[in-house]
Structure formats: structure tokens, C-alpha cells
Length: 194
Image (cartoon, rainbow, N blue to C red; front, side, top):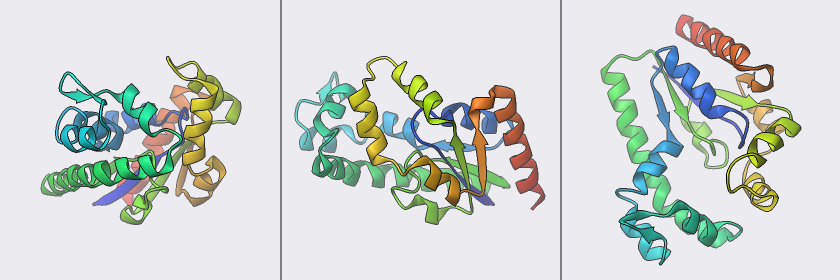
């Protein structure tokens, strides 16, 4: 089974690209979606104890948590020390199930693939990219996003040019959905033939 790491900086179109892999019948483990689920389940207790005031109605309020950690390196490290092992546990379960189902290829959709060292756990890397002006436009059009928040997020991410340098495959989403979908289909075809 070939394990492919899918990554890309904020606003590059990684989630849409992951959907194209799903449409091509490739199992996808979404680290972000896993974190969101953990914030309603296993992570509520430990995160709530470490960051008081972040639990609302029995789940982690992501806006409050973001306010508590963004721009604070030690707080972010404390949060990651709680959440990353839980995400890894779910990832291991996903890989076990995929092997049992004899999947030839799987995707680990990990936004911070390089930053967390997860690139060492994959066989191939797909980086989703777009020009900086398109990225900026996409991100700043999101509800609640500010220039400051965007810059803080970018500061935590490996620069796009470095990601592209370290990739086995690069998908530029600025050319539209059809281009990205075709690129995904070509990657899937070449990896299944490997």
C-alpha cells in the first residue's frame, strides 16, 4: 500500500483536492476533520483543563481556543502535545483498516505535514499550491479572517516554495477545478501502476 501525504498552505485548495482523491476512490484520512471531531470527543477534557474557558456546551469552542493559542508559541506547543497523539492514533486506525481492505493507495491529508515531521511517515508527497495573490484573496474572503490572523497562520507553515521543492507531485489549483481533478487522476493512475 502506497501512503501519500497531501499538504498545502492555507488557501491553496487542499480540501478540494482531497475531495478529488475521494472521487477517484482513494481512501483519505483528513487530519483537520479528525481534530474537529476530537474537539467534540476525546480532546475536550485535556484541552479544557489546559485552556480554561474554551469548552462551551460540552465541546471545544474553536474561536476561543484560537484566541488562546494564536501567536503564543508555548500555548500552541501545549495544544499540539495534547492533540497530535490523538490524531496519530486515528491515523493508525485508518491505515490498519485500509490495509485490511487491501487499498493499493491511501491519502493522509495533513496540513502541517512538514512542520510535524509527518513527511517521514509517507511514501510520496503531493503539494497543492497557488500563486500568493490567489492564496491571499481566498483566505481573506473567509468569515472572521483578518490580515493579522492570516500572517500568524502563514508564519507557522513551511513556505510554499520549500513545500513544492520537497514534493513528488505539485498541483496548482489556480488553473481551476478541471485542471486539479485531471492532475489528481494522473497521479492516481501513475501510483496504481507503480
